[in-house]
Amino acid sequence: MDLEKRPAADLRKRPATPAPERPAAQADGCLVVAIRLPVRILALIFVVPVRLLWDALVAVGRVLRDTVLRPVGRALAWLGHTLVVVPLSALWRYVLAPVGRALALALAFAGKCLFVWPWVALWRYVAVPVALGVGWLLRMLVVVPAVWLYAYVLTPLGHGLAWLARMLGAGAAGLGRGVRWALRMLFVVPAVALYTWVLAPVGRAVAWVARGVAAGVVWLLRGVVLVVGTLLRWILVVPAVALWRWVLAPIGRGVAVVAREIGAALRHAWRVAGYVSRAVWRCVGRLLRWIFVDPARWVYRSVLTPVGHAVRDHVWRPAADAARAVGRGTRQAVAAAWQSVRQARADVRRALFGAPRERVPAGEVPQGRRGPEDAKRVL
Image 1 (cartoon, rainbow, N blue to C red):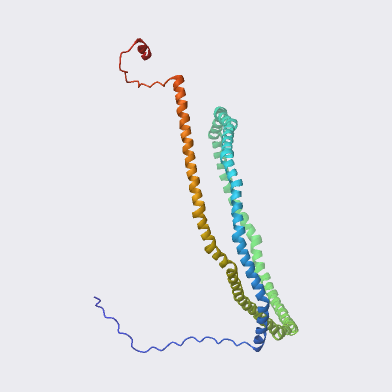
Image 2 (cartoon, helix red, strand yellow):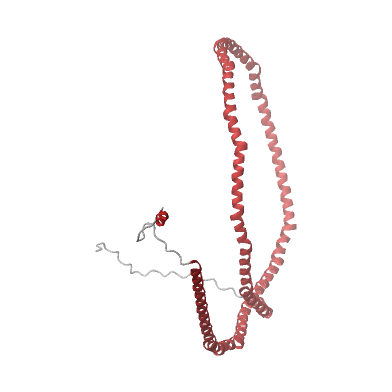
């Protein structure tokens, strides 16, 4: 059970939100109305025959596609598959692929025999032993003497040269400090004094003069630009704006109205022509159905079907039963004749060569007393 109190409903009337106002449709002018009706009439007169011809071409194209092009395409596809795809597939599967595999195996084996195995043998049995011998010789002839030379000759000599360089460096450092103090007193101090007391004041004076000259030049250029801009505005811009506003824009609006009305008329005429074309072709189809299809259907149902049933029941079925009975009797007669021939052939063979011997199983012993011939036969 819900024990919480629900908030009391707000019974105060809420102010109704005003619906957004839709902009009123812009009324067409008299020029638009005067142009629209003649243009639509002319478009309807010229578009209806085109639409009828277009619908007729579409119907003919569909009939050709369904009755001619599609069966021909399927037949060509089957023929191409039977004559091209199947032989090529069989050729690839049963000839080219096995031959390619055999050639690949043969080339791989030949490549190994000609390139891989000789290089492997050369590397394993010639290059590696020679490299090991050369490495041992280089170690004994170069590395060991170089290590001895470095440890017992170059290292003591380097230590001595390093001590001599440290001593010369200490003397050179003192000499460098003296040279630096002399250069500072001879060049740096006079240069700083020259910049501070001579060059800087002269530069400030030159900068002040340059600023004055630049201000005068800027003022002069501003005046020239203002005059030239005013002249160009009144000579080029104002006439161009007036030409656009009072000549080109009204002409463009009129042309746009005429083009829009012509387009709308053509769309409307095309739609009306579609309705007219649909009605005309529907009427033509119904007439063709009444003239050809319905009589043909009536003839098929009322004449051909009963005649066909009668011919099937009274002509073809009895003829088929009679042919089937004749065939059955003929087969029986031929079988009886072949049986008689086989029996006669068996009787002739039995009269000439005797009856065939009965086979006795190996594990059974015939009843009766055995003679020497039977013993020889058993052995």
